[in-house]
Image (cartoon, rainbow, N blue to C red):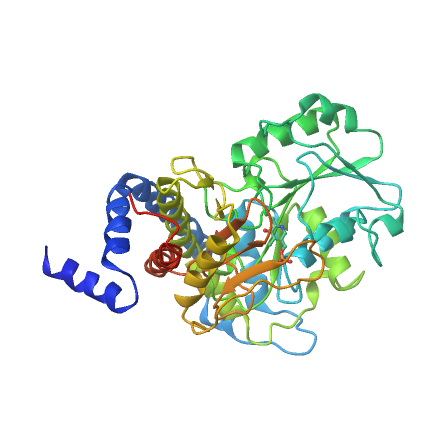
Length: 432
Ligand SMILES: *Cc1c(COP(=O)(O)O)cnc(C)c1O
């Protein structure tokens, strides 16, 4: 064994990984070179895209200075929004810390574009859990339903494809906005590729050209060479404590889209008449901008971690979604354990490998809004950040853990090895 390799193995062993687990995992890593090269190439392209936008928009040191109060003429905020717009290929963007999270960004998008009497359509099945209250699928204060905005849904077919006939029938004179969730979130359906999203948008617009198409882009940014806004989406929406914040953004959300859509969203976020003109940066612009600069590289590490985990747990006989060889359209990896003890062991390992709160042991708890107990592992610099290494899932069949993130590939690798270590220590699996 070469000296560096031996030192490395000694390190892992001293950090709690047994030699058997180490060898099992590194043998799998050795088979992934081609896969990882592809991921590297996508990240390289996306890094160029971001860098080009920063150069074109003349990002300067002065942009990184704070503004206070109303925040009029905040050059840094305006430049960052131009950079986002260029990277996503849109006319305009709204990138703000006043958008508190992904759900808020999506609610803002829906509430700003829809008017009483309009209908919202999801042609890809049930949207993300938190949107149920925004839409009014579960009654809630201030939901779209309370404003007389109706909702229609067409589920994906059992094989995960679009129900073209159903979608055609669901579109009517009231249909104003179609919402498309790119990532599977916490469902077991496949994540949509940008290409599939483009086909869906083209189909919808052919039936009714003035329909707005919005994409919930959470967890998808920089995974592929293009974004949904480059295949016809009028609006793409996401959270800055996921992919595009690069692990540095401590808060925020973004909307990128046509000038009209962004104007409407800005007037809803602040006030009619004020729109994008207000919103002091309070010194956060430099972090948001640096995070966006880092994002392609951070997403690369997270993607490698997801692929590594899929290959390890599939080899051990567990169902993994996506599977070990499928192409990737988001950073989420699902592993089905069908066993609460193994599921908890996985989360214990992820937590133990974290830079923050590594001494904490995750336990299932009764989280509001869920019908089963939920277990979560997260030791993050930014509270709740899921671009950092994290895992969670409901304690019920199929005892599936959803795993994502990792600010560096090296950390994701150690975290996954540690998860396997804890699973191995239950004595319920053999490494072969
Ligand atoms: C995370 C996520 C959201 C909601 O974001 P929060 O920041 O948790 O409010 C919405 N949709 C999808 C697909 C997500 O992954």
